[in-house]
Length: 76
Image (cartoon, rainbow, N blue to C red):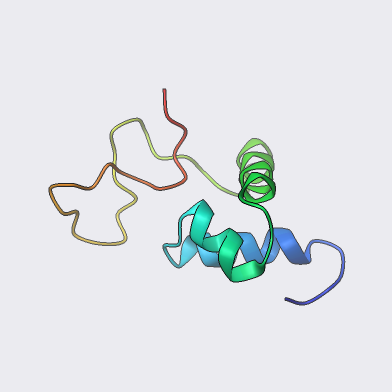
């Protein structure tokens, strides 16, 4: 991972955009999953990561029947 201001945010967003869920992103980057969740929350609040409507899929694939939707969508 590149060091520097915003490097973690950029890395998390890139891996999330590639379809990785928070746990996989954390393993890939060697950080705690809680940190990834905080980064995703920050990105959502600042408009860098839009949330899909509840029950919607992310649209990056044809959903399988077991798909629960976007892996970073907030659960209610």
